[in-house]
Image 1 (cartoon, helix red, strand yellow):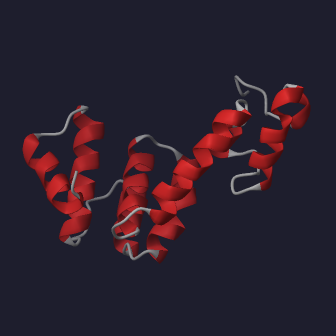
Image 2 (cartoon, rainbow, N blue to C red):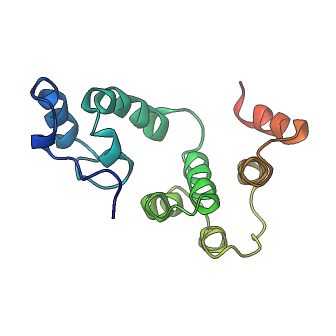
Length: 146
């Protein structure tokens, strides 16, 4: 059983219903996944949506890299919702089936392009050891900049 009941319009304070309606009508309007929690604070959700959109759709660099970062994170945190939300889009952005399948199945990873290797190394170090060494950090800086 969920610790927090599913949010709906009736549970929201009247003064926040306009923000709730705005959030509910856009992407993520269905009450599942992270947005279902954010909708308990509709104004925060309304303000977060543009940031999510920027990171996912407008930031510079190959779109496969944030998708890969999401997949590495979802696998490390055992988060099926995020995995399922990003596996298909990661493939569409150019991640190989072999890589996505190996990440999903916790198998040894196939050879990957150097930019993907940088993202994978960073994520794996961070999630396994809760820190990133200077060499790995520098590789990310070299790839993406500050």
